[in-house]
Length: 251
Image 1 (cartoon, rainbow, N blue to C red):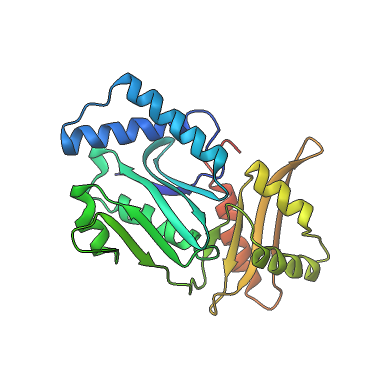
Image 2 (cartoon, rainbow, N blue to C red):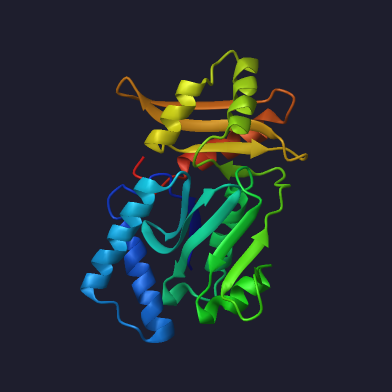
């Protein structure tokens, strides 16, 4: 029985992540289009991933894992309130098992705080998949698709790939309730070093707790703070599980 987990990849530069991306996309292209990716194409693909990672203002990625093995992924970037999905691939054995749908849903949720629109360019065989999940072509016959993001993400844990001012302000208020700090320098450290960070939303889609981990003074530090007006034990446990579930980020 397969137990597929969807895990945010905060730091794509850790060993093997891009190798896994290329391995999975090559297998999917071979299965669907009978296209064999050459070794130069593999190297070029990894170079492109490295370049996009280094030059993107806000990158996001999720991996689908079966144990310690990545079997699917989605990645992209965000700018000017628009998230762009650059790739979504699943290993042939795991196709038609909702892995792609779960990856797509996770990416959309994560973009809630930074974008109101998601865009992508679809391969021919995937257009029905994206249309089923609410994407529409920008014009008749186009393979360029767009979708408006639902801004109401309620009572759930959301990964934060780069803290925005809204997130920092909310987390700072929650930290102060707990006699702790969440200042701009701390947030910058989390963003630049790509350490794991999650927020929890309440029934009104407002941030009611956060969790993050990083290295400070050569020591691993974990911080979990909850708005005391919420059901703190439930939320704290969810955030702790999210931090504890990091498998492929190298953190």
